[in-house]
Image 1 (cartoon, chains in turn brown, red, yellow, blue):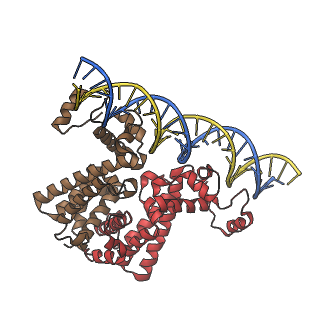
Image 2 (image 1 turned 45 degrees about the horizontal axis):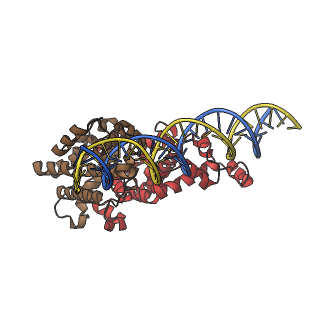
Amino acid sequence: MAVKFDTVKMRATVALMNDSYHHGDLRRALIDAAVEAIAEGGPSALSLRAVAKRAGVSHAAPAHHFGDKAGLLTAVAIQGHERFAAALERVWRDTGNFLEVGIAYVRFAIDNRAHFEVMFRPELLHDDDPELLRAQADSREMLHRGAGGADRGGHNPTAIAAWSLVHGFAELLISGNFPPEIAADPESAVRAIAARVTI
Amino acid sequence: MAVKFDTVKMRATVALMNDSYHHGDLRRALIDAAVEAIAEGGPSALSLRAVAKRAGVSHAAPAHHFGDKAGLLTAVAIQGHERFAAALERVWRDTGNFLEVGIAYVRFAIDNRAHFEVMFRPELLHDDDPELLRAQADSREMLHRGAGGADRGGHNPTAIAAWSLVHGFAELLISGNFPPEIAADPESAVRAIAARVTI
DNA sequence: CGAATAACTTGACGTTGTCAAGACCGCTGC
DNA sequence: GCAGCGGTCTTGACAACGTCAAGTTATTCG
């Protein structure tokens, strides 16, 4: 079932209504189930009905919470961007090293593959969702901060180069387009290729 | 299965059997229709029945030629890799310039967006299809040839760096993740960021 | 000319996303 | 302490989808 609760309030509520008609934290449980399903078969293999079954609710419950399939994927993308921004910020604050931020980018794609596979696919999402736009803006700001200072509206060539490099590596890696030697130790591969980029 | 129609004989046959019960060149027509459909809504929005309707045949005709949906997408990916390899090879032979090959990579993604969106998504394809594997190997050989000599099994760091850079740029560009200034003139953006990479 | 074969259609089945309607439950206000 | 209200979830239905089996039509070859 894999239900998660990170607020005290929710924890109390759930404790009371567990196994009742009202699930109490269905929204979160559905997102978790969706992430699991995507991790297994990619976003295109996601089925609302399978997600519902995984969460132990009726087939139409997901649509009630998210409107439609794109709404559920949007929720996953938002969560992804939030965690992504947090992960990059943490590394940037801890190391101040822009190469380490790039490595964190790739590591995030590996460790949160399901989220990553959805975050940059606007055609699967409600790409005008205000919460999504905010989360995207946050994660992008972290990116540019980690990739060389003033962003000038976000088209600083160095930042674009670094973003492209690290994003391309991540995409090619998780889609299985790299030879096994690289897939076996992606981090040192990133370090090797990042050395090719002048700051 | 896997019938090809690029021989003169077939072409003549087609001229004769146009508008008959046997379409004559249905396979090609279905691939074209699929490419159009993907260009409009992405691979996930592709429907075999819509492709059939577009080609003016019955709903089950695509499955007859390609087995299933993944088979049709595999055919598109194969065609994509073939054209891709040809485009890169042409540029490499004409200019001998490895930067120009990178630019051709991005230009291909823009001009053949539907093909590109399918070529690097194994989960949508029959990724063990021998013809696909051959086409992939061809296009990858062209890539490494354009990106710095001996490939040593394909994990030459410089080649991986160049591939990642240019692939990431292409992906972020066609998925609409770049600001409009860059989307407006991608080629000069690529030239700007490629200058950041040491050969 | 007829039989075999390939190309395509027809009809059906289970599954999917989505919608409307209803059932259930905790909460508020009296 | 209870009536009803609003939100949560279920039920049932529908059209569209991928896939399969069987049938129909054209072509090729003996």
